[in-house]
Image 1: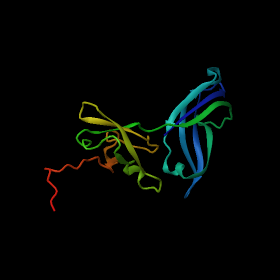
Image 2 (image 1 turned 30 degrees about the vertical axis):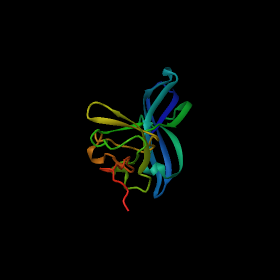
Image 3 (image 1 turned 45 degrees about the vertical axis):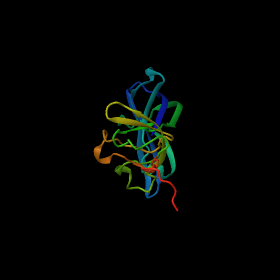
Image 4 (image 1 turned 30 degrees about the horizontal axis):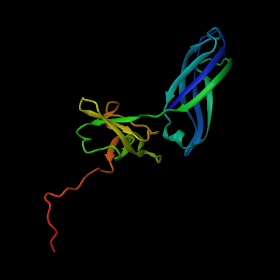
Length: 191
């Protein structure tokens, strides 16, 4: 997920909505256009206005050979206008810092346990990395039947929760298990 911010000054007194999009060429996807930021109407008397928002990199963007950030006046008129830009930024933001799971499901999970997180069925059809592995750094009981797992490494891939979409929710699997072997009774050495 990425956060985009740009300061814009429109040199027109007519209300001018606009958007920014990425134009790129990728594997088997020549000349794609994906909108990443839509901005409300603005005019010269507004001065500098900051427009910002979030967007998710899709599998086509991830494999792009090159990319261009482009501006488009969306008032459906073929009128050329002068536009000033300043402080353009696109920064990566993490998806989650912790995972919420049912407390009953996580009873045997402990700090230091390694888990595997599959992003979701939605992203699994492509060749991009659609899962990741990390270590549980902390476990907090939420007192509502769920526990929050603090992660050593925050994912930089999309994770869809059951609340967002039950059909495409991510799966979490325990890869290591903390356990102790204790014998039932002590026996003297025989032999």
